[in-house]
Image (tube, rainbow, N blue to C red):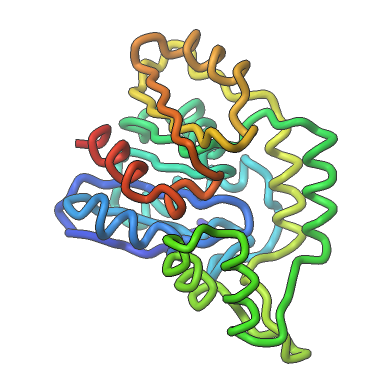
Length: 257
């Protein structure tokens, strides 16, 4: 059994939601969305294998991630749940629905990273071999703010404080295994998981300023799910639940209501 480290946010008797972060992330990235956007739900926000405070040991492929997720649901005595996934977490959500459909009540995919271009992901994977580090917490906060609009600074700052770890040489970097991130970028080039015949209600929120969600992916999901599939596009970045918090929270809340 491989139970993941997880944060439980919200009332114990609320409708359960399993929240899956993106590559290099961690479960607390869902804290604001859970508390402010889904206050009536019980959100189980996990640190994926190789990330945060969960086990870092390999393997780091999709199959092991799915085993970890099922073990974690069992450990928390959760049966059928809504699954909320961002980026790589969205990819895992679709594979969980395909292979364990009895555990998935509905899907929310926030700019999912599925069937991405292999050449682009080869570069992204190579970049993860030497992840960025900073000499201090303040330097990390300043550097990460450069990637966000000013209204998202509070979310970015909280993320740095929660996710940064001091290294033996005194520098600071995010708490994830670079090798696990390399494998994740490779897995994101796999063909999409077929959801044909499942009829699981699915909301996909696309970040309009990015190219992670292809027209081919949307067409395939529409073919698989028919009227159970819904797409919304926001004029925002890949970190849509920070940079367009209100709109993202509203869409997710209404869909899960």
